[in-house]
Amino acid sequence: MEIEFALRRSVLLVRLKGELDHHQAEQMRREGDRELDRHQPAALLFNLRGLSFMDSSGVGALLGRYRRISAKGGRLAVCEAPPTIAKITEISGLARIIPFFEQEADALQHLLLGAPPERRS
Image (tube, rainbow, N blue to C red; front, side):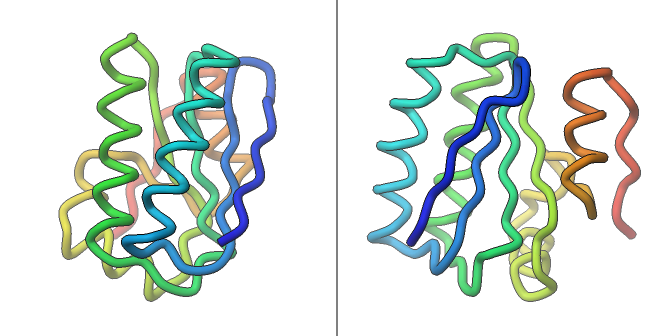
C-alpha cells in the first residue's frame, strides 16, 4: 500500500493506493496518527481513488480516524471511492456517518468552507 499525505491549508489529505486490508490498515493507522499529531489539522480527507480492495479492517481504520478527529472537534470526508470500494462503505454503514464526494475539490470545499455535502444516492 502507498500512502501519500499532503496538507491543504487546515485539511490533511490522505491518498491511498493499493489494498487496505488487515496488514495495511495497521500501517495506515500508524502513519495517519503520526501525521495527525504532527499537523493538528482541522479536517481529514481520504482520497480512495487508488484503492483496489478494502475489507472490514479498512472500514475500521477509516472509522477510527473519524472518531479521533471528531473527538478534537475536527471533520472527516472521503472522496473518489471506486465503485467496489463505495459498495463496501454502503454495506458497512460508513457512508451514513462520513460524507462522501465524487471529486477531491468538492470534498476540500466542504471541509474548508463548510459547503454542504451532496449525498450519494
